[in-house]
Length: 178
Image 1 (cartoon, rainbow, N blue to C red):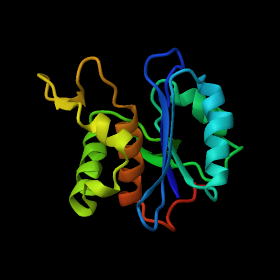
Image 2: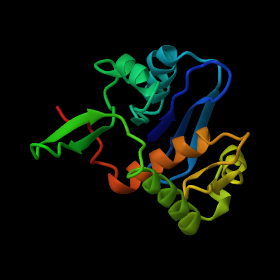
Image 3: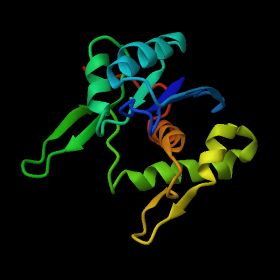
Image 4: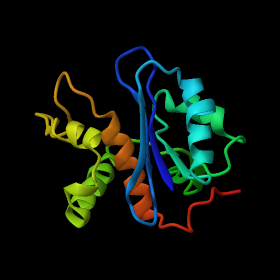
């Protein structure tokens, strides 16, 4: 299994979301969404236990904003945390970093992965909660893909992060660097 997680602040606006995919069948196994869960609890309790329940699933947490708090609760406590490789421009080193960093370079990978999912698997394998959010995704005036004003993209982002990592790191290549 692979779990994509999009943490939030737990203050009633955006939701903290975790979506579980079976890596063999690419079927959605579960979705967790809560806009009132604190980031530390989301990591230490919700994600850790969800990951353990799903056979130590590869856990891919968005590292932006509240993701740092979530990741700090999981490091050393969860055995299968996604580690990305960041290239350090000034000295050419590659550094391991926990979590998935969403930025202008990685954002297209998220939406490309979702497009691939729909193209290869069709709409029947996509949970309704994800489809509902996908219907609100637009290209804004700044050419950024995002949810329409007044809507959320938390499930979309969690799903896309998991799918992007799954396509780029096939099963068997998912243990963290030591």
